[in-house]
Image (cartoon, rainbow, N blue to C red; front, side, top):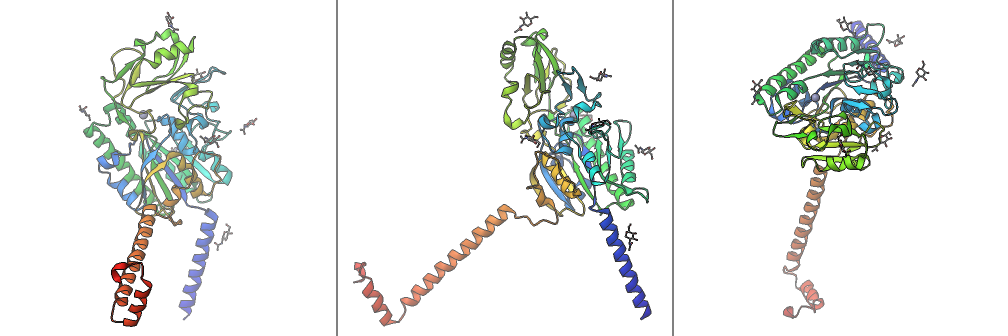
Length: 459
Ligand SMILES: *[C@@H]1O[C@H](CO)[C@@H](O)[C@H](O)[C@H]1NC(C)=O
Ligand SMILES: *[C@@H]1O[C@H](CO)[C@@H](O)[C@H](O)[C@H]1NC(C)=O
Ligand SMILES: *[C@@H]1O[C@H](CO)[C@@H](O)[C@H](O)[C@H]1NC(C)=O
Ligand SMILES: *[C@@H]1O[C@H](CO)[C@@H](O)[C@H](O)[C@H]1NC(C)=O
Ligand SMILES: *[C@@H]1O[C@H](CO)[C@@H](O)[C@H](O)[C@H]1NC(C)=O
Ligand SMILES: *[C@@H]1O[C@H](CO)[C@@H](O)[C@H](O)[C@H]1NC(C)=O
Ligand SMILES: CC(=O)N[C@H]1CO[C@H](CO)[C@@H](O)[C@@H]1O
Ligand SMILES: [Zn+2]
């Protein structure tokens, strides 16, 4: 009896403490991981048992429509801001500001000027009282809106995935007194590096690197389990862009069309950005007729759907190569066997998204999502007020366990099915009542015959 009371008391205290704990800690922590250059169809072409384990227990978005240009920096910044490149300002790997005459390059990127048009989630989430972390994600070590993440690591390719991961889990655990990091973003450079080197069509090489990537996902799962973070952390595994196969037969040489004295080159391939030195119309005309697999645009004529026009760092002329084509100034040398940056409507440019953790549905799949929609999803998961952005939660909401989502095809099927059943029942009912009517009931029959004067055969 006494034991029972004691047990009940203990249970009560534990429950209270647990509730206190969750109330104090707020929503589950969120870990965002990007494997650079992970083309969506690698998931179908290569076995990835650990990644598969994650999405069978969570959600798989088969293709993520990323932003133009489909390069690493623009897309990583879109993931953490929900903005198109023209709005967040990280437009390419190489940029030029005509006012300050400053140059941006991915190895010389820490001037806040380039990043301050937007604010990444690791900064915004600080205002909700959270600690945040950023490991080698583009912009991690840049002071944006006067701040960085609580913890960050600058880009260093010599640091292994496991070391990066260990730092992140340590930050997430906290030190006992201080709460841990609530949002962390982690970057890894494969399979992009190998995709450029060997080309995405090289099944042997890509198979090897994707096995390594999957082993890293295995490490992630076991590290989270060992530290007790598993089950109370939401995990997003995604990427910035895909990869197209290039070849030496698909080179576009600018020098064949126009002497280099006529323009200043800012960025080269597969999207060239240039400033005509004089006579922009003449330069444009020559470039426009240069090659059937390259499209030239004057800045004002860049198609709306690319969301790549309204920014002072977009140069007066851009050239876009067709899928798999490489723009060079001169020579016959192919710089890379695989490349990306092409039109974001190409499925070869699309990455994927896997989501798992306490907030997500299990074994759920959707075929598409916009990469700008990942930001409002993350803000929702963290209860952070999203800053103005180009995404929406409409599609992504269905990934959440707490939401009931109407599956449109299923609903159509259901409605059609119900209507069909109703019609069958009506038809059957009529047939039955007619048969009964034509049965041995002479008086009724006579009455019907009387009314039926429009049918001469019955007379
Ligand atoms: C709940 O949290 C407060 C503040 O941290 C603490 O003082 C209190 O002891 C906790 N209550 C329980 C039952 O753990
Ligand atoms: C980095 O960019 C700044 C600003 O454009 C420039 O002053 C500096 O020389 C560059 N550094 C390197 C190493 O190129
Ligand atoms: C950043 O800090 C400087 C000086 O500390 C201040 O003048 C400036 O307004 C701050 N900028 C922002 C965006 O908070
Ligand atoms: C990452 O972890 C290593 C090893 O524990 C440590 O020496 C280093 O300071 C950590 N880096 C950061 C930025 O926390
Ligand atoms: C594929 O990559 C491997 C290196 O992993 C290389 O040895 C092989 O020649 C490549 N094959 C093709 C067809 O390029
Ligand atoms: C994207 O969002 C920004 C910030 O709200 C806005 O200024 C811009 O017009 C939006 N772009 C589009 C194409 O809606
Ligand atoms: C259209 C144009 O500006 N063409 C010039 C390109 O550069 C060469 C060499 O400097 C000039 O001779 C062309 O007039
Ligand atoms: Zn790349």
